[in-house]
Length: 164
Image 1 (cartoon, rainbow, N blue to C red):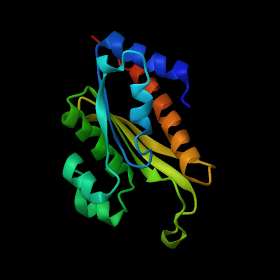
Image 2 (cartoon, rainbow, N blue to C red):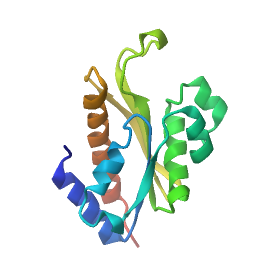
Image 3 (tube, rainbow, N blue to C red):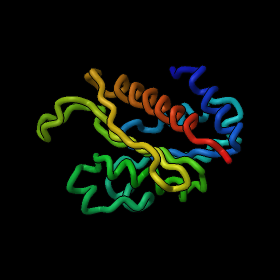
Image 4 (cartoon, rainbow, N blue to C red):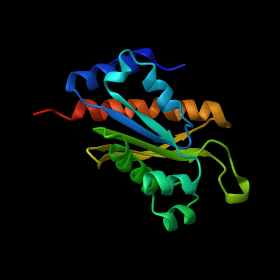
């Protein structure tokens, strides 16, 4: 299901730096956790993850600012940033990855294409954030695409950070 070489490279990078990662997911519904847990020796660097699907759980567990989250249906770069930075503390990890978005269209809310906002934190500070779009028209293919693209972005960040 996932790019095995990509996962192994991520695992090697984290193990080589003796660093860890945790995830806070919404739109990917645990697929990042599934991907990380399938890397050899994952327990040496994967601290765990949380899937917070509704605004209440995002606010309660990941300290997302509730007024902003409610006003934006919990889908914004700010919410992804909150997830990434706060999951570092929640799981005592070096890196935190947060992702929110839409894996289904919602014409009543003028959401006619699928997209996700993501953020990557290091030691609780955001080092990278962005938006992923897809041509997929429905749930699982979009979720899988968001997961793979975010893993590639994470690997780019891992390679860019030098350990002193």
